[in-house]
Image 1 (cartoon, rainbow, N blue to C red):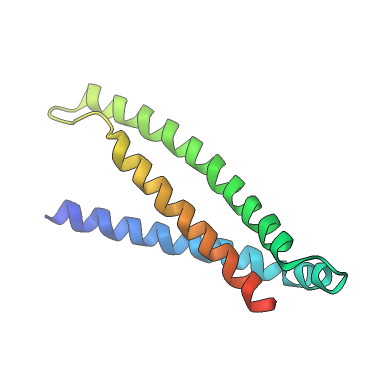
Image 2: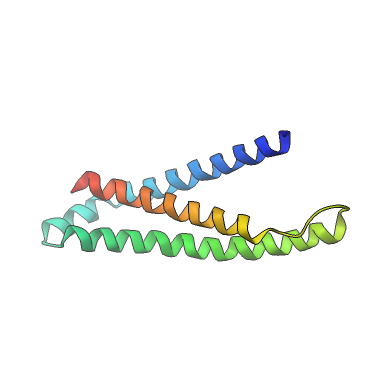
Length: 114
């Protein structure tokens, strides 16, 4: 029970950290976003530009996270007694949730400016 609560707490901290990081990055680029819109860029193209950049960042981080989780899970399985190998479904669901967080954190500042 305690390990589950600790895991949920760590997940929420990572969720908040990713959201804050992406929001800060977008807010820093608000001037660029405003200039693009003032010069005639369509709102959808600006949203697509910023969303694709965030998803590319999250995609790279996801690849690194999958490799690290697999490697560390194999090491823990080899060194510790009664430790299961990494669960692919859990890793996949976590990556999907962080992808959604990245989209929300990217779209909010763009929607605020437009």
